[in-house]
Length: 163
Image (tube, rainbow, N blue to C red):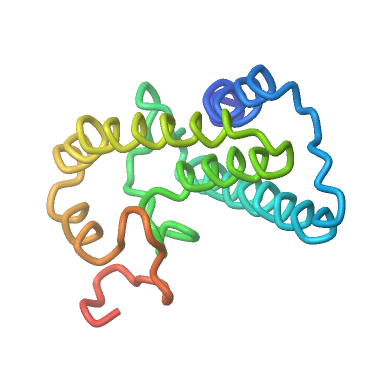
């Protein structure tokens, strides 16, 4: 239940409510370009939603939430986390940028940039130091092998230095 509540509170507000307040979700008239722009926008939004839900489900499987107040007891390094350390943040950005494209709204692009700056600040200032204090060498090994923002092409397997 905590994971579902956090899903609606954090990404729901950041990727849903705030973009709606900024854009009114008014679809842009792309005229002749709509045949390519609209599907790309929807692919970005749908991909973001799928990865976001997958990442949240992994936290539920590990008996915790992504919320700092109710974390998991184990480091989540399965599923999409084998490719990139911050899939939820990337998924939320994909959803916002997909909406920016769909609605032809530059304010949403600016908002995505502000959201990215806030997320990187949070990750560097709070999340990474907290994960290191909590999980120590296991987190350092994970961090050495899995990029934070640009996904690996192959999945990392914990305990295998060559992967």
